[in-house]
Length: 147
Image (cartoon, rainbow, N blue to C red; front, side, top):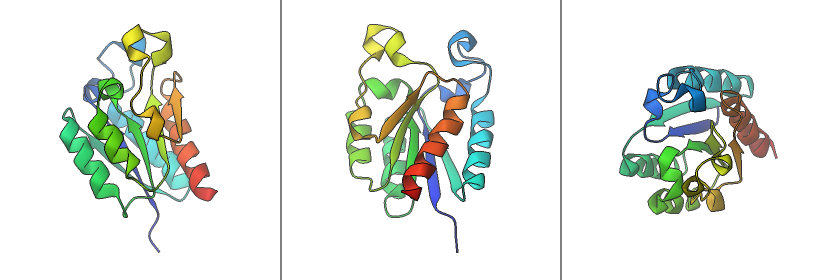
């Protein structure tokens, strides 16, 4: 029997993690975060797929493709957090658990970062824990899937 799939979505500029503002986002690369997430998912009996895009429509397409195929979504929407209503709407149509993820704590940063259009359609948000946040988010969706 195949393992349930968790879709990990990474928004704009996250492909530059490790070199982009390391004082805010750390020095760990996106690839390192994906490897760590895959390890946690596997230990919890889950498979992990990852999609990173700097284009909102590609993330919407990935969410649509996850419907009926993936058990859960972990999404680090990056700057799309604050205004991407198309991502909000797509996530609202997804049947499984959704966890919003941020390396930094948006609530402790510039005022424009305080609003998330993703939060209303997420089961919860993991923010401000740096690299640990990826593992926490995968554990969260695994626990939600376990009931």
